[in-house]
Image (cartoon, rainbow, N blue to C red; front, top):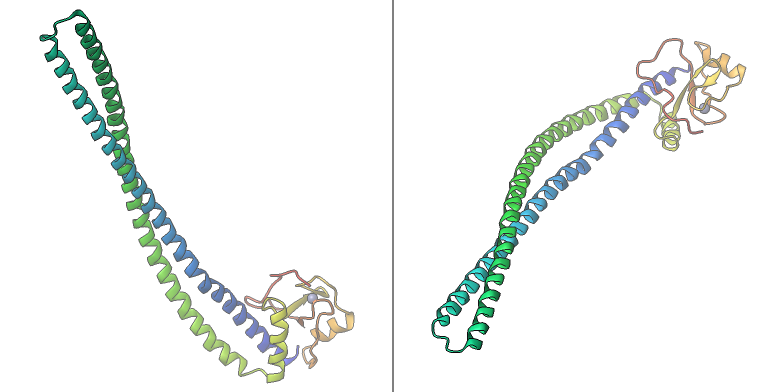
Length: 250
Ligand SMILES: [Zn+2]
């Protein structure tokens, strides 16, 4: 193995961790926004339920008034009955009385309907209040969890950036440039392990003499996969957290 490859393998491990951390850090604002949106929906549902209840109460007042007004009329017609002189006038009055009684019955039906509906709307308001409380309690816990996660991720990110600086100090600049160029083309994965004469990231076989050279302890050459162009390395020991077949693109 080329002596610098060992350093690149270490750098690759750090870079993959950094990629993951940056993705994680970038996901926090969206998660917080989703929590806020959930709470806003619950608040809106409560507002709608309250509005419906208020409208229902207004209707109820109106129907109560209707009942009262028809009862007043009925009383007036009944009072007039005693003073009626003709049979026709009496009949007309009886007709008005029957009509008023019918209107009272209708208004009372409507009122009863509103009262029953009002109870249901009150239940809905209470349910929406409970739901909002639950959502807000959960949202607060979620926000705290995300804040803690965010702080930990930020701390780890800073530590990894410092570790990367130490790691790149051991790598010649032109090789580092080369590594970074390849990494940019391959989702941050510039190195590919070779096993059984095969590039583990694109599954294309390497030439036998390349494989032999990769396996030679004292080799000072750097080889690339002919298919995916990543820098190849061979190790007979498992590399801790070495980049494995994470992507299969060429
Ligand atoms: Zn390859």
